[in-house]
Length: 353
Image (tube, rainbow, N blue to C red; front, side, top):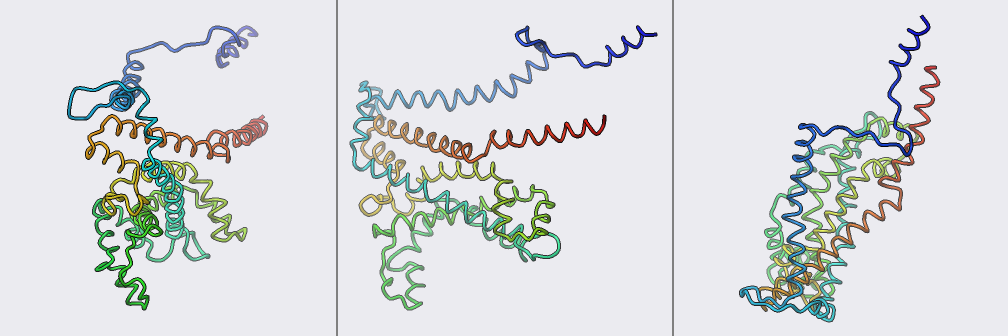
């Protein structure tokens, strides 16, 4: 009888993990596992290598040549193109312009998008169930509409609205009694050209990210907002303490995408100020690259600019991840939550015992 009980206890025990330093346990490679890895890991990796990694390596090579673009002949010049680039005052101006766009456009756009999303989902009456403002569906459609229009059309429309002689903006301001804007060139003045371009980019993108944040806020448990309301928290306090931490990953992703769009910004800027604006105040790296490649036929030099733009984009994304990690996001946040989960599990096991 005693032997039977011991065998039953032994059979009911879970298999013990391998001892530290011992041979790790490995699962056998079956046909299903191999096909799974090939389909879901091998195929995306192959696509990434063929269409991203190899072209980038080719771009680095062509950036070290004097290739003219329309001839098979070229000479290897090493890092001369990169040295020439950072001695080019026009390129350095373009680099400062895209840095300015990357600093302001994502910050302003996401702030406005978050405000619209919070108003549509949580900005309703302070009593009763948590809900958005009246007519939330209408405001959602109106805010999303500019994103539906192609970027080139948005740029051309606003270029006409900024027109100093027949533009709608100057007409409205003049009608309000501001005569100094009668023939004001919004895109022709160095002080207003870049802010005008930023406004159009923000206007065209804020609706999409508002919808993105609305979807993220919908996934936050309503009990959290109801508890905050019971504790007397206002809308601002609720947004900062509950909404932002809950949708932090969505904000990080949106910031990266917006930063990449701002670093490029070719379509909007080319549609409104194709010549780079007064004193190149709105010139972007992509515009400078386009002009050097197709106007001057210096494709090797232009390719080197593209490599630098790609590196700047990667650095921007890395900085966003780093800031998120240093401020408590990512894995750091999950590690902070882990001890609480272990404590609850231990308490549950103790109660069961």
